[in-house]
Amino acid sequence: MLLTSIIAALVAGCAMAWPASQVNQPRQSSTFTNPIVYEDLPDLDVFRVGDVYYYSTSTFAYSPGAPLYKSYDLVNWAPVTHSVPTLDFGDKYNLPSATNRAYVKGIWASSVRYRASTDTFYWVGCIEFSKTYIYTSSGSNAGANGGEADSWNWQQAAVIDTCYYDCGLFIDDDDQMYVVYGNTQISVAKLSSDGLSQVSTQQVLSSGSTTIEGSHMYKINGYYWIVPTQPATAEWMYRSTSIYGPYEQRVLVSSIPAPLANAGSPHQGGFVETQDGEWYYISFMDSYPAGRMPVMAPLSWDSNGWPYVVTNSSGGWAVEYDAPVVTSKTVPSLTGTDTFSFLGDEWEWNHNPDTSKWSIANGGGLVLQTATITDDLFTARNTLTHRIIGPVSEAVFEFDISAMSDGDRAGAAMFRDQSAYIGVHKSGSTATLVYVNGITLADRTWTTSSTGTVAATGPTVAQSTVYLKIRANVTPAFGLAPVRPATFSYSLDGQTWTQLGGDFLLVNTWTYFTGYRYAAFNFATKALGGAVTLKSFSMENV
Image (cartoon, rainbow, N blue to C red; front, side, top):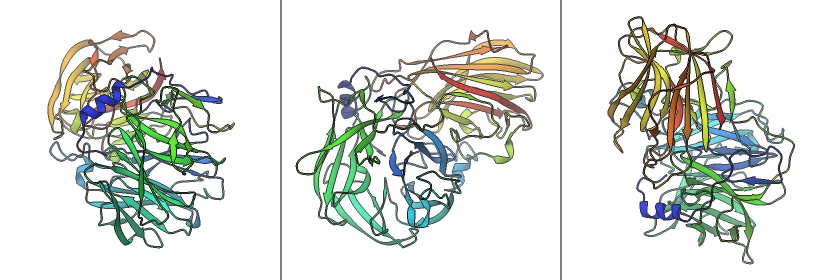
């Protein structure tokens, strides 16, 4: 996770790009296309347990945090749990006020591993450069079930005063647990036998004047490997026969042309070994407005035992490679319709939710009671977000607005540091459809600089059900002025649609880190007590 960026390097990475690929992966195919998932899944950590692959990603202030995705083939992925059920890092993560918020803070690059000897998954991450938190989930029987977890029971297990910044968890052959971490000065911490406290830590290497971070550690062919990123265009690698060094260094990739146009060079990723002993490198590329999307390439090994990325004939990251795993097993699709019989792991709140203000309705549907009195979307609690699948998709929100109160505002948003929404404003007994844009956070301070303007007004709505649709083009445009549009439409019958307002151009800046998300919200401007029910949500590529 980079605090300062060398924009020239990023843009240079974008310049050396290749044509866009398809997004939907065939369920059983002899090849795959990059990106493997056309969604914002940054700061990844990937590993295998038996026949199951797991992928952890950062989530900042969104809650629950650190989702764990599952795959059988390294190509099709779906979320199955969150390693951090509640962000217990301080009151700001509960969004108590406009001056006490956690946007861009929280869960940055972190790490997950499974320890077979105790049947325990461990999540490790440093919060706000201060302390390291450890969450565990035990008793899943994953080791006995070929990697399949019977259940998840994540809980905060420990807090360590040392910040394991941008860390990688490693379990050695003798079951000893270590954490590699740091920025430029890379250290290795030895953990206690239960993995919950620090026994010792020492610096093992330095990159001098060049920034490196996001380290992961592996043991391959008798060597300990430390693999950090050199942000935001390269991946380095170090190896040693001793975990504490000395280490020798090589460059894995540097400014490699990306498989999508207008995206940054792939970097900051992890190695993973298939059941057949083949190794793959999964990294992300800066792909705003979508965010940072994962791409995968096979690794091969030179005569000196160093890995290298298999490229296309022009030396770039290929759009298409042979499938790494052939299997009949698959995971649920990332697209489709949700009728909310429960709240799935594809959903995350903008901060920790007020759990007394949302519920699942009898027969399905998500009830969102107003949880905050504010005129600021960024200060409204219980805004529910969903990653956007690209390159172009439509999301349809079906709302029951019959229980809205005077002054309430509810609807569907393109949610990021520069946001817009289509929704319903309730004034007295009158519900009016509106399009609001210009909702903005100030860069880097993340204070609200504008609560937005009603840019277009639709009809009043007398019926209970209203359908809201967002069409979002999140094709990479990194380094460009805003050019990808989102459009907002409404329907009173779910069939006939009317666009409200003009195109909303999506920003491509990186400092907020998270890409655009679809979001459902309901907040009060006068008094609490109103509610809406999100009866269904659908997302499909178009």
